[in-house]
Structure formats: structure tokens, C-alpha cells
Image (cartoon, rainbow, N blue to C red; front, side, top):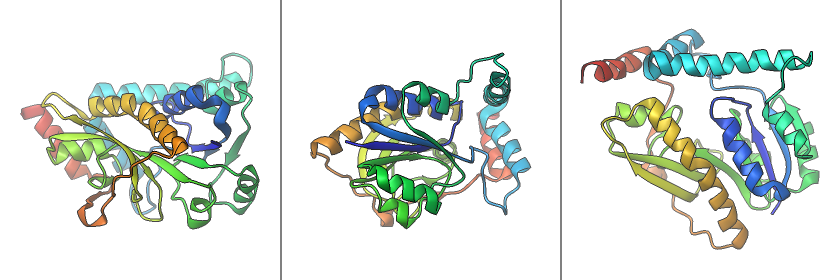
Length: 261
């Protein structure tokens, strides 16, 4: 099994997720590309400032400050590492230390990158970038492109799913490992892990639980595909719900519930 990974370098959650997969499947990883973009990448018609305020309301003071500190310190660490003052802990440096080829790309859909990737002939591509994957890349791997989604597809397609699970007061959630298609979070589900949502759960606790489950679920999906015994779960469009970035009003409604319930 030849596995290629495309990812953003998010130090809060994604980096450890990718490291786990590499540690478990090192001999099968044929390359990793870091694409531009991060969790604050949103559409041009949305205000990034209002999105950050919404995240503050959703995460709460401690959660927001913790994630902000991790992100800012990571950027400082990278700059200081150029002068030998600190060790660079980026995913690129980790992958290089494992003697795995790396790429830094603007978008995974670029013709130059696709040409190089075609020569590698991956069986599976794991995508954790913020880019919408286009047809030419989707058709490139022998088996397909896999994604981790923090919800029980086909419900809650889209962004910031742990928030929407709580906002809609749903009783269960989980993680779906699914094939990527041209639609948003469509494609057959290879592995799905469920758990109950408790009254004590917050956005931060759901995210933490999801990322405890997700790496193992991804490895399980890879191994099922490798053995040829995967039994796909239909990602039925007729049952799908879709969420976009929360508005400031929705974030405030959620915070009021947390404060006064």
C-alpha cells in the first residue's frame, strides 16, 4: 500500500493526528505535502475578525487562549529554529527526520504538483488540507482519497462540526473516515466511530474526543482497504445536513446556553 499525505501544519490537533499515521504506517508512506491554509481559512465573503470572535465564544476563554498560545508559540518556534535557538517541531521537519519525501505547496490542485504526484503512483491519498480537492487529484490514486470528518456523516457535513452537534443538541456524534468526492463531505464511509454526547460536553471536549478516535480510525480504514475487506457505509445525500461557519449570533446563542443552563 502506497500512502501519500496532503495536510496543513496545524499544531493544535492535526499534527499529532498525522504523526500517529506516519508512526503506524511509516514503511508505506511515500510522501507528504504541506499545503497553504489553516483553520482560519474561510471564504472571501466572510469576516475573519468576526469568525475569531465567534471562536472565542464557542471555545470559551481558557480554550481560546490555550489554542491561540499553541499556535503563536509554534510560529515563534519556527522562526527561532532558523537561528538554531529552538527546535522546529513542524510536521515537515518530523517527516524529513523519517526520511520521507516532502513538498511545500500552495494548492494540491496545481498542475506541477499533480504531475509529480502521478509519478509516485499512490494507492491512497489522505487529505487534511483546507483545499477543495478537484477531479484530477481525486482520480489520481489507485484506491482513492480519504478524509477524516468530525461528525457522523451524512449528518453535519461542512465546517466546525462539534459546534453544530452541540448547537443542535444532538445526542451522539463521532468520526467518519470517508472517500472524498467532488461534493462536500460526500463519498462512501469506510469507518465510522460513534459515542454519546453528555450534558457536560463542550466544544473543546468533543474536539479532544474526536482526535483521540480519529488516528486509530484512519489506520483501521487503511488496513481494511489494504486487505480488501472494507464494507462501505452509504453516505446518503438525501439524509445529509450541511453546516457552514457559525455566525456571531449563533455563537452567542451557544455561549448563553453554556452560561445559564
